Amino acid sequence: MQRLWLFTGRTAFWLSYPLLYWYLRLSRRTRVVMVSQGKVLVVKGWLSNDKWMLPGGGLHRGEDGRLGAAREVFEETGIRVPATALQSFGMVDYHGEGFRFQFEQFWIALDAPTEPKIQQREIVEIAWVPIEELTSGNTRQDALEVLAAWKRLV
Image 1 (cartoon, rainbow, N blue to C red):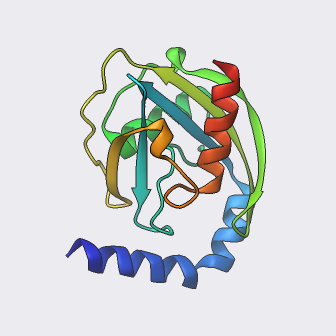
Image 2 (cartoon, rainbow, N blue to C red):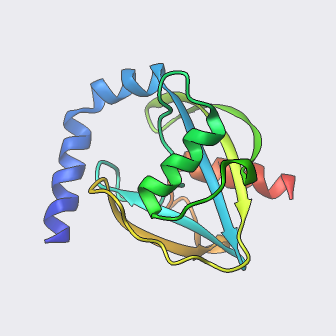
């Protein structure tokens, strides 16, 4: 059943590509690096290319970046993080994979990996993955760029 759901999501992704292109360009977005014991929390979206990405998403109109990032983390992973604990490490103008959009990067270190729970139908898989296992073959380019920036930071 999950294969059918993923196939449907990939098909919808390509059919809606022109709309996604403009929607992403016009929205404010976030990405969150959640790390614990050498692992990063990553998700696979239903409407995607079946690659790992970082939790995050679009901000509501007028929403503070930290609050929106904490909300998105909870919506996608079921993990509550205090917005005040999220550390910003800049804005990114991303141009890749046929998309162009801007997002604010945040990170948080957890003492122990919290068990995630998929909260919405938009996420089909979630896992704590060792950082070195995230490659261009299995991870979206924007996530790899955020992780590279985060590694330079810490």
